[in-house]
Length: 126
Image 1 (cartoon, one colour):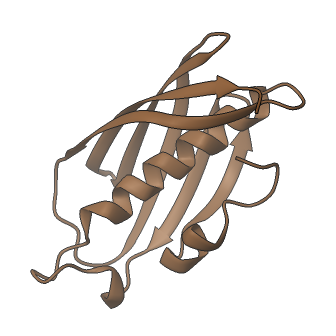
Image 2: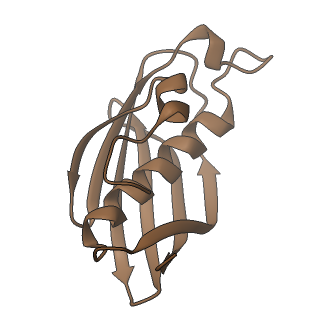
């Protein structure tokens, strides 16, 4: 992940990273009709992308010059269907080692937890 904004994919789904500090990020997204699956529910890949992007954003500030990070795995659990409205994804780094980091994301709509993710990221020098 670069020092800049999340990129064209995040822009394409309307994801905005609003807060970043070492070990934490917050992203927001407004659900639009083009993000719904054939059952008129938010496609699971959208909430997955919120968590994945949020994890990279939370980890990025702790990287040394020249280092990069990449997703190794993410486990996503979906709790509630989403059909419209606004989502917030908050991510924290739960453990940061020299070459591996573990992270957690919670996606909420208002006060309702709609999805939770845990992830592992590789930290490396290209």
